[in-house]
Image (cartoon, rainbow, N blue to C red):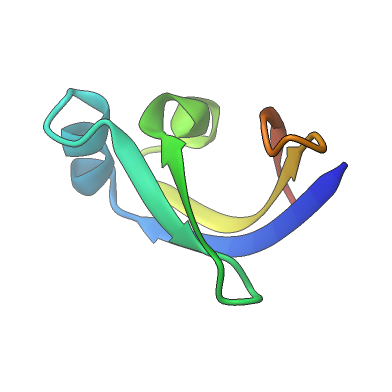
Length: 72
């Protein structure tokens, strides 16, 4: 398993444009400087009225396939 840590701060309006299809993915930069592109739908459970804000941990398998995304 691989773990990637990052902080995300997206306003509600910005995220709606991602989720509605204008941009279907979110590009994040990990603490190590690695850029990872994730489907916007993976962040839907973390959306609140203020948007998506916080620290996250992305877990992938040995083939870098998505396993889970969680808040810290």
